[in-house]
Length: 329
Image (cartoon, rainbow, N blue to C red; front, top):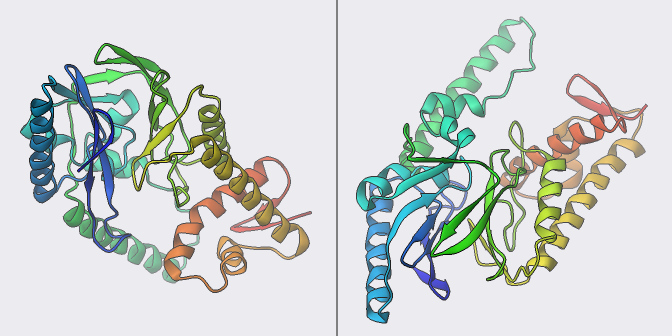
């Protein structure tokens, strides 16, 4: 637990083995009418550690003679590493759960969560091999989700307390904070901004030292770029508090860096397709070219943004598609 700004604390839920359970940040805005931003993991140990550190924060406020009353928790987006703790934190700390209408549907049950991220199977072949392969993939996904459920303590919140618009204003300690929709990492993503303080809680859309994961079906490259540009236009932006990692203390520089990097990566993919025409490339072909000597885990993470980039270029009529392969005319 660390005070990252006067009166604002970050409780970092530490993970294991990076990708299996990455560390995640939960922010506590203390005061007479404070707020918790994001809920983290929902395993019993995670909820217990949060309660212990939250009690420490209350003690710090009491020692300072500062009134601290918090009864609300706001969700940034409906990914399990951020909403799984909602139920436990509501039960243990009495927080009212604040979400948008779209988040409400996704976090209400395992069925709704998984169906919202379900991708259509493009393989329509009738062969026995294809049928067996699809069944094996399904079994693997079930095993994978079961493992994540154990590590992350995935739980659902069927009846959130407060439903808000994705573009609205919320009062925290008699100060107006702006909530606005910032699709990209996921299409229901929101961020929290205070102009006077120059603070932005970015969720997963802006991280300090690594690039955000992007991938279908709920990410979009163009929407992500628009969200970044919208953040660039925010006046008096001094610091960004992300959902993972350390604060971004040079926000405009970091936002500009991400925008330029995404533009470069789009051009990289386009150049591969254009220069090798009429050869047709799959996503995996492009990964091999862009990441020839990188670890497998990096290549797996790259699949999402490469697929999104190919769809973007196809929409712009810069490339054509034949099945799962792309080429220039």
